[in-house]
Length: 638
Ligand SMILES: Nc1nc2c(ncn2[C@@H]2O[C@H](COP(=O)(O)OP(=O)(O)OP(=O)(O)O)[C@@H](O)[C@H]2O)c(=O)[nH]1
Image 1 (cartoon, rainbow, N blue to C red):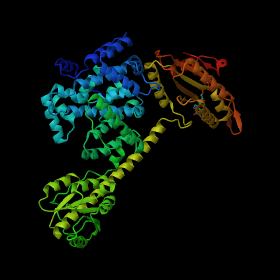
Image 2 (tube, helix red, strand yellow):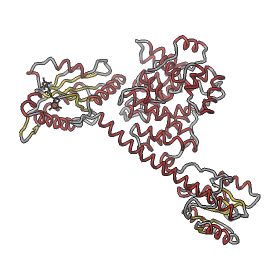
Image 3 (cartoon, protein in one colour):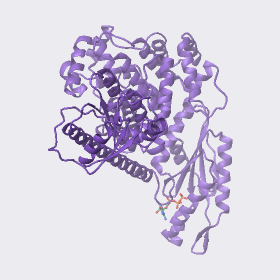
Image 4 (tube, protein in one colour):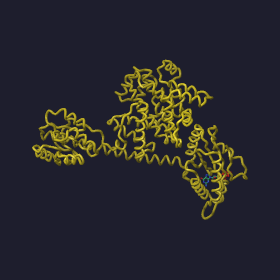
């Protein structure tokens, strides 16, 4: 249940003029679409008056997959393809974004807010087919899901800055702190604004609950729950996109779990994220929104945790090593110092391997670095910072512990090397005690990294398992166990979304309801198991005779239905006749006996956007009427 802001309070907030709102063309479009008699030509005229918006709508229309092979070049076609209400929602999103790129609240990161919101919007679009909702609607709701935060910052810039600081200091829930200070939170304010702008209820519900989808009380398997989970995942992905490397690392487990809930993992997840990031960067450049470059997702997952720096005050472990003998590579150590260092390292129980500083030796060290690499900062031919950077470029080098040996007075070089990825620096001359402490620290760090890696592999494994189980459960929830066809719930959901799509895009579509004639007699004559076999064989036959774009499902009992997107009434009747005749001629077998089966088929049709009730219901009423002589005929209804 959404708790909207009290209407009187909302009215007085609006009266301040500070509440974010769609301006100019967007405002006029809202007003136009509130009228029952609006005309598409008026909408086209309005959009044309703002060339920036017109250009973006064309890009959206061309990006959307409407099965067209040629690009849409006219604004009128773009608006028809998108549908008037989606145009309205998109324009609202873009307008609010453009008129609120900065503001008065000192602690509110306006650029970061829109960067994150745009990333959420694009990620939502990538998930459109999971949520079975048009990608433009998802774009808008992704962009505006947190508009309540922006509104708080606009209404109460001073007080909200304090709330934001508190939330950061205490690492607390922003919404709780908002309620303490303003007696409302950004979810409530955002939902109230979206409702005022006329966005569809399902999108508002998803925005309101997207932080905690499981507490919303939505029915399992419902579209609104999938949509809310999609938004939840998209938001989490947007955080990953905007985070620095260190913060990104800690966000990954949450992101993987959310992806698993949607049944996305492995290569599919890598593809979704990489495509999303590419489009986010493209759209960010076009809309002047802040984005940042991030590595391919597979690389992010494969990388080790960000380097943990060693402090020189690490406690000594009584001279005892925390792990068995480690490989220590000695790179570029002067010949005069090498024997002594080698001996010290051996006496501490590790295995030193000297590498000379010739180009070949360095290449070898970089190609196959040991667990601990000790390099002399004065090695000829390569600056210490460059060595560290090269070392960190390879996956084995990322795992190594890099320890540099410095001469006194080389502070600048030390700082550069630390910045370039060195883990620790030791200043010469070295005592055996210092070396022992530092090698013990290195050992502990290596063990810690290994443990983190193990934990991460565990998380990845369980997320993968979770994704597989989730997919299987979802599959089961949507499949009829006897025939393995989509079940009634799946079929009716598909029908509803195709119906809405056809209506808003003025496309034809049809639905067939197929009923086995006198099925009760088959059960009574041959037994229930024979009836089951007929249902299974018929399901296989229907699957084989339907087109790829159609969906055949078991409506219930001995009734099946077929949703035929983009089918004219003529095509639908032809398909129905073909199915009827194939079934009539087919030999249904049960224990070496042939059971004759015939079908009666009802045809419901939507002609170019004409509004009707569910075709299935209408057919059911109609089907109850004809007498027996009318059986086994397609019945036409448009
Ligand atoms: N074997 C089997 N029978 C089923 C199944 N589901 C429903 N039925 C049977 O299907 C029969 C449907 O009976 P009716 O609704 O009278 O349909 P009908 O005999 O085809 O009559 P008309 O629809 O008027 O042609 C009932 O006997 C149900 O028990 C099933 O999964 N397996």
